[in-house]
Amino acid sequence: MADSPYIKAFIIGVFVMILLALGTAGFRVFRKDNDGKGNDTAAVKALTIRVALSFALVIIIGVLYLLGIIEPNG
Image 1 (cartoon, rainbow, N blue to C red):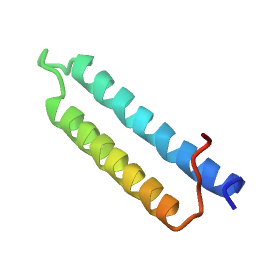
Image 2 (cartoon, rainbow, N blue to C red):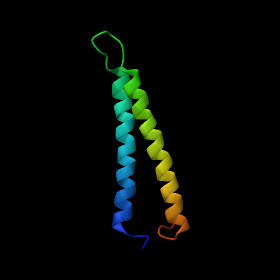
Image 3 (cartoon, rainbow, N blue to C red):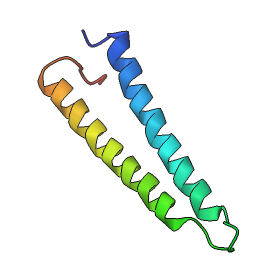
Image 4 (tube, rainbow, N blue to C red):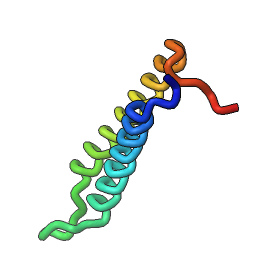
């Protein structure tokens, strides 16, 4: 079951969402509004989403490992 393409696709998909949230935060920090200030609130929200996704991914991988669904490659 460790070679299940659905689990691999899910993990890769969550990882891509983490990278997109990080990119969104960076874009929001450097983009200036009409008043010349950055959009800090949107950047903080994007970083919060990134942290939550990262935490959830670690927990999900741990649970899948404990259930024996995934195994280390070593």
